[in-house]
Length: 325
Image (cartoon, rainbow, N blue to C red; front, side, top):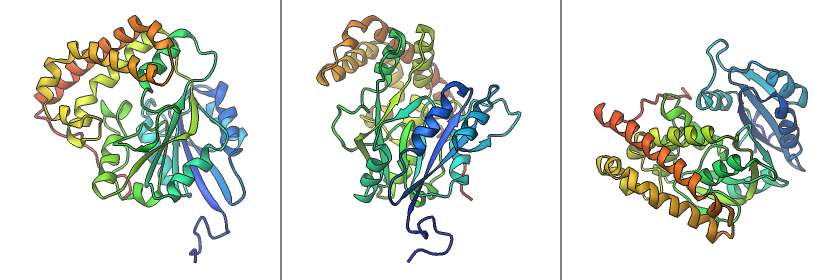
């Protein structure tokens, strides 16, 4: 029987959706309303909006749409979605905790499919990040470079990790970990890997549920494409070598070889990305081959710079401290 104060004591299940946001006033109201519309018989939803240093009307728009709005460290300058997610998890009262990025929009039955995967035994459930209609060309290219493993045409099943843009975790399972890594450079690219590795080490499963779909609105611009891929590459070795939370994790056990071969590997990873989309029946990335190669070269440049920095510091794991004490 549920204890007093339990979110399910009223006979319904409370799901907490945690959204870090910065300067998203134009779209955040629609996102909050779309999330709240996922409520169904026996399922209630609370939206925790963590305002991460916005200078526009993000907080007011989210509150007007029905979110519980909290500001992350006012005056701190913003720009740390990992810290925003951790603080949001501490403030949330539901179970599971669902992390959603502010540049996403959920499809119908999104929450129901996350819950079904949890009910089937998954501690962590990652959903699809699908391509919305009418994005500019470089925004679509940025999407193709990032989400080739996590779209709805991929097969579901157990995975070593999943990005935080569409991610659900049982409250107890998350509470036993150190939470998202808040320290840079990991905090803005691979902040989920350390705690997901902890879940797997204790026997928990991370499951990809392709039917739990959100549409991801990547930002346009060739410069954005290069900067984002460089940032991902910069923290890749530092976050994946200590945790092993990666596909082909063995290669991160040899960071020196990875750094030495990173530029030639850009060609291989470009072919791999395009091949993933071709196998899914998506032909457009083939037409974007030069831009995808440029993005992978930017990733390799970041991998070299970040990998050398990390190895010079003695290959220490990212300094993460407990968030749930």
